[in-house]
Image (tube, rainbow, N blue to C red; front, side, top):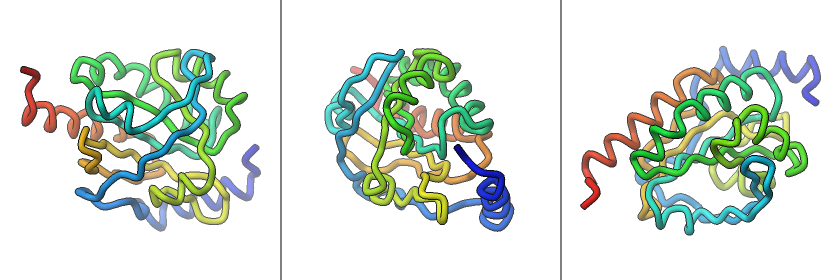
Length: 179
């Protein structure tokens, strides 16, 4: 559970640093395998496997069932069909335990996309650590099938993540039409 003092720290970070560090566009996305769940059904998510079918929208969020993370999950759930129509896979990632994410995947992700449980090493490899809280910040990536990062967007405000990732996937798809 996030303590009130942690919320104050989040608010201070949000106003002091509207964008946080992230991997640069063009960098190779670190491959990973993590426990994940979709609609409350656990499985093992492997980035390299997901990239074989198209781009991956990988978004980090601080904590399941918090206000901003719930808003963001709802927005990604509403947009999942648009991502899928362009061949993209969406996966949310947090440091929450898989048991908590099983519930989150049903209620807030509406069984539309998977969420994965990350360790701090994975969060750090994507430069998505939220200082002082031991959580990930709110960072969204779009990763091309070749593993290159097409978009990196960090902002604690959940608004904008879906629109920016949709635009990046559309831009990639326009340059790589299905034959």
